[in-house]
Length: 204
Image 1: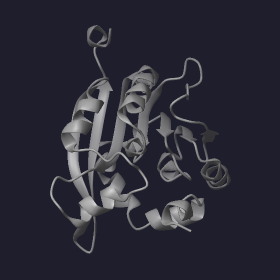
Image 2: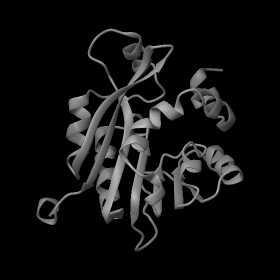
Image 3: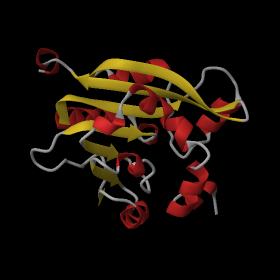
Image 4: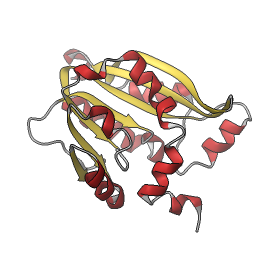
């Protein structure tokens, strides 16, 4: 059985992520007071990877993997929906203070990234922000580049490519490259993007 197939198991996936999830999420925690967040939409939530951070918020997690959703419903507060993000439409009238997309977009192509971002822009509350964490493809040969090339996701992108995609629908307030490391060795190059809704005239 390949590692990709093994990671479809929610328990195995959580064990794999356990040493890294705090450092992966660190830019979000550093730039934001999560205690002030009332409504959260977590797209590509996995087996509830970040759900515990929003235990005091009204939380909705969405993931395509039914095993992940079943696991998350057993373990965490909040609502969890099994759905393909490309076709997911938030409940009518619902808007969110914080929309989180953590390590999801490198699994899908540009066309579908743009489709999802467009829909999410309409689900964002007027003063809310989208928060995106995703895998960067380094330009130089390195362990991080090797791991990006062999990730489950087939679409790691350069920083410039990510920036272009994100800014189509959101006005940036943070665009921050960072590393996830083990014993001082960078394993994954990442980027954190925080964005607000574009002004009405720009979105029309």
